[in-house]
Image 1 (spheres, one colour):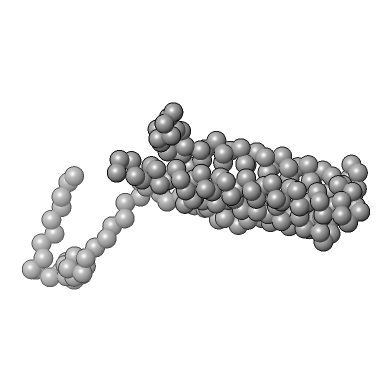
Image 2 (tube, helix red, strand yellow):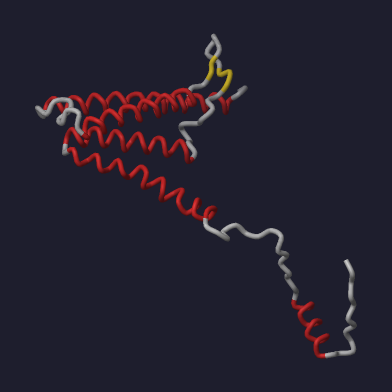
Length: 184
C-alpha cells in the first residue's frame, strides 16, 4: 500500500479535528445554556471581570482551534488521496501540541464551571502560565544564571591510574621513570 503512513496520519488527524470541533461546540453551547438556565444571563456581571475573561477565553479558544485546524488538516487531491500529510500530527502530539490541547481543556472547564458553579472557577486559568513557568522555568534559569554555561576553553585533564602511578614515582625520584618534556 503506497503512502500507508501518510494515510494513517491523515485519518488520525482528521478524527482528532472532528473531536475538537465537537468539544468546542458542546462546551460553548453548554456554557451559554447553563448561564441562561440559571437565570444569570449570558454574562452575570456586564462589562465586569467575568465578561472580560469569557470573551478572552473565546478568543484564545478560537485562535488555538484555527491553528490546530490549519496545521492538522491534510492536503488531498480531487480523488481524495493524501497529497501531503498534516504538518502537525494531532493524534500523537508533541509538547507544543499537548500544551495547546491542555489550554483548550482548561478553557472549556473554566467556561462551563463558571456557568455551573461560580465565577471563581476563572482562577483555574492561572494554572496555564503557572504550568508554563513550571516547565520552562528551570531550563530558562539554567541559561540565564551567571556561570551557568560550561566553559569550553578550559581543558579537562583526565589521568588514568597508570599515569597517576608514573607521576607519583617521578615525584619520588624513582630512576625507572624518566622525565620527558614534550614541547607542543
